Structures are given as structure tokens and as C-alpha cells.
Image (cartoon, rainbow, N blue to C red; front, side):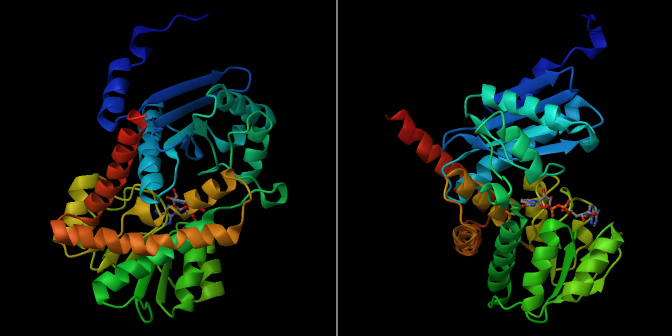
Length: 366
Ligand code: NAD
């Protein structure tokens, strides 16, 4: 066994510092030499139920970035589950490496690590993992959801995510314009992938003027051809005049550089972690007179879908029906924000945290 060089020693104090700041319960570091598996599972909070969250695969440049990502994402899952009224906690896993590393042995080994947690963490698909990968994981553990429809699962959750996001956009329009009609509204969708393309379908049925941006121009062109809409360059989209901006690509799009450039009335999209610095940029949007629909609230459709599957007797119609609640929850959040003079993001956080705290007290009293 090779000795660890001093400079390579894991900085355990820093990791505990991050866990303390975000109030995590557990961080599990998994390694398997024969398959090259390097996985990190973060369990943020299990007050509402076992933690559930997808497995993301990414070629992180270093382990610190992977830890930061999994800690932040798992916390987001607690908030998402809580505000959506689900009886499930927040967790997430990351696989460090190139997606080409995935094969049966690799995924089954990962499944065994999940099994070793005895149900405290339930996995599902996420960026660079697919429903077919969940089949291999399911050979080693029952704590997995998001299986293909052919195997009785709910399949790709993105249509439900897109539906919830669409309802979130409508609720925001109701608040900002007094009507939830999107007819004639200039809406820019950034990212025309799985969620973006379904969202574009809903919005085009509402006769919105769509603008579509994707670094993969062919993808944007395909969506434009199927639903109508103008393709715009994925570079400097934030300066484009628009009514509604729907970030549906990667996180961190709302930051010191982009917010001052935005001319829209509403930001409402499916991407996770849109606010670069949560409190700072939520407030900055508010100061710019832009209504922000909290990401973890309006993109919860996918979680609602996999949760439905995990409970058994999956039905897409029921998952869609449950996702409809997003519209009313958004309106409640906007009202709470208005009453308290806080940003919708803070209001959504407040609601989500309160439910976890209340249920925590209930459990403690048993
Ligand atoms: P996806 O990978 O299918 O699509 C993302 C698209 O964004 C791709 O077409 C990609 O080319 C494009 N893109 C990347 N960088 C871009 C940039 N700078 N400008 C423009 N386009 C860019 O992913 P998805 O499943 O559609 O998810 C989109 C977002 O929604 C992600 O942030 C994801 O975490 C979040 N989300 C997805 C779900 C779901 O059910 N799929 C659920 C909740 C949240």
C-alpha cells in the first residue's frame, strides 16, 4: 500500500466545516480499485424520510470540487422535497470520472455501496447517468428509482420537470403581470436539452415568442424546427431583450456579471443552483425589479416523479397531477415574500426549512 504524501492528506477539518455550515448528516466516500469507481454520497437530512437524490457523473478536476458539488446538491434536495410536501429527505451522489468509465461492474459496485447504507440513501438518474444505468444499480440494491418504463419505472423524469417549470413560469407571470397567460411573451430558454425541449412545447402551445439558446446549435435548431421559435447565440444571452428568462442548462447563471445586464421581468427555469451566491443574488434580482421563481421549487417535477415511482404503483398521470401543486406553492411563496419584504428565494427557504424543523420536533417528541 502506497504511503500518502503530506500534501495529499484529505483536509478533514475543511470538510467538517462545510458539513457544519450546511448541516449535513453524513458524507460517504467510496472507492473500488478494480473498476476505478470513485463515488461520494452526501446525506443531507433524513428528518422527512430517507434521503433521495440522483447520481451525477462528472470529470471533476479534483476531489474538493466533487465534495463541494455533492454537499450543495444534497442540501438542495432536502429543500426541494420539503417544499414539495414529500416525505423524503435530501441526498445526492457524484461519480468522479468520465462517463465512458461506466459499465456493468462499475455501476453494480456503486449499487453495493448504496446497499451498504441500508436505505438511508436512494439514488436515481442525474447528469450523465441514465435510466439504463439504474437497471445495473438495481441488481445490487432496491434503494434505486428512476428505472426505465419497460421495467415498470417512471422512465425519464424530465417531462414532469418541464411541466412543473412551465407552471412555475405561469405562476410568476400571474404575480408579475396579473394574468398567467404567456401569449406574446418573449421567453428565452437557455439550454434545449431534455427539460428545455419539453418546456418549449408547453410554451409554444401558449403562443409565447420563444428564443432558444444552446451551445449545441443542432439541438436548438431541432427544437426550433419542432415548436417554432428563434435561435439565439448561446453567448451573451443575458443582454437580449426578453420578458422571461428560463435558465435550463447549468447552474450559477445569476451572478454579479449577468444580473445587471438582464432586462427581463421574470427569471424562472429548471436549472439547479441558478443563484451563484444564494442570498446575495436573490436580493440583487429583487433590487433590479426581477421576479425570481426559486429553482428548487419549480424544478421539483423530476423528484416528484421518482418519488412516485419509489412509492410503488407508478403512474405518470398521478406524477403530473402532483406536480400541479407547484403553481399554488409559487403563489404562496410570492405572497410570503411580499408580506415580509424578502426575496422569493428566502421565502421558499423559510417554508422548506420550517417543515423540516416542525417534523423534526414531531419526531423528537416520540
Ligand atoms: P440536458 O443535459 O439534457 O440539457 C442541458 C442542455 O444545456 C444541453 O443541450 C446543453 O448543450 C445545454 N447547455 C450547456 N451549457 C450551456 C450554455 N452555456 N448555454 C446554452 N446551453 C447550454 O439537461 P436537462 O436534463 O435538460 O437539465 C437541465 C437543467 O435542469 C440542469 O441544470 C439540471 O440539473 C436541471 N434539472 C433537471 C431535471 C430533470 O428532470 N432532467 C430535474 C431537475 C433539475
